[in-house]
Length: 187
Image 1 (cartoon, one colour):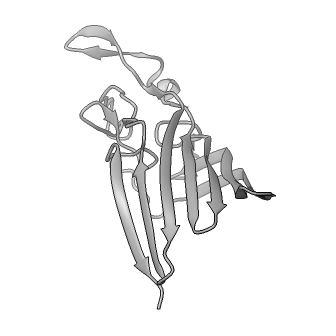
Image 2: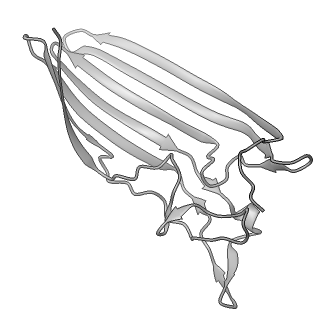
């Protein structure tokens, strides 16, 4: 049977979003800005057919908590940025009936949960007098890899999404550490 997102019978999402910004002028240093944004998902249910409600909240690819925290110091023509992207822990053990499975007739332990993941990003920007703005930075500074989980398929509707043994979900950084330079010009 093919269970897809075509004609979903029932879907319910509830959560809490939080956004906060705090700017603080520092006498001879510049302006310090803290910005944070978080989403805490309370309910995520889906029913493809009448009476088939699934609780997806907290499963692999559906973390209950995601967020970011950014800090910027602006000083004259310079700005210094440090930010974190946070992805909460997940587990699909309840969907599998625990942390074991059968492989070639033997019971084996499987990894169907992830820990919290934090990605750090830094950059330095400079505004030139001629309207040119330059930014140099590093994304995923600590070279944090996606979480490692077991590739597992128990039936057509219960497939863990992996590439190799890495969790293959949109919240995770697939590129690793990368450096960038951004030049823009105002006319």
